[in-house]
Image (tube, rainbow, N blue to C red; front, side, top):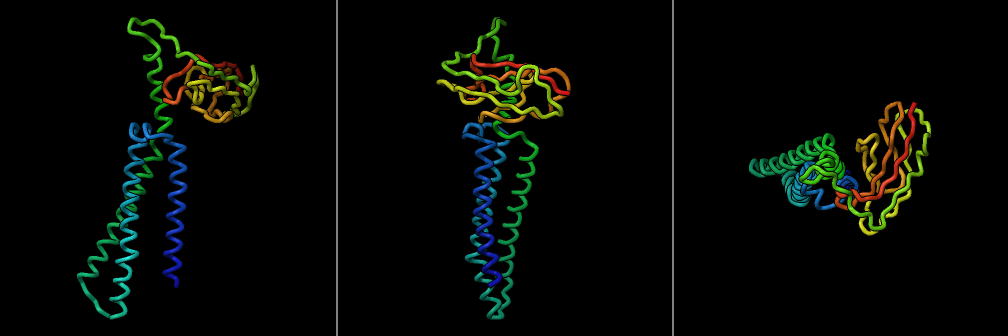
Length: 231
């Protein structure tokens, strides 16, 4: 009975891991392009491969190795070959678990897939905004996209390094979300209509929100700007 309860608990735990993992992947990756084109996405794929292999080995041990060991124990039959085979299966499953932990640790130090795309956009922003002759290339047409900053308001004063952000977004034909720039530095992307700007140093700052297309790279000619103060 205790073994059966443990097996049922393990199955429930696996189901919860799959559900929470799928949700976190959707939050941090967002789409297939990000999954296959970023280090975060490739590491996540590797983790998923290890996880599937571990699930397969776990099922093999549950439905094959466990009954075999029970039969040998009841019969009092000590078969070295069967014991070695069972130990190999359990050892490989344990190794898969260690590899999953290693991949998870690597994911914690890599920028999430969507953030990696945003960082790439920031690094290439100047190159993408100029033509071959060096003249400034205008942003893509807004096509109905608009954004209006609701918070912070003009010259609003904040204490601490966290600034609440609220905005009204009209996506138009191509808009998907906004990029938030503080003093020209990309601070993040926001899909909902509110969020928090973290790590803002004391002083006077300029916040600019720009509407961005679904590719996370194309910034549209739709933006709003406001100045605020942090003490």
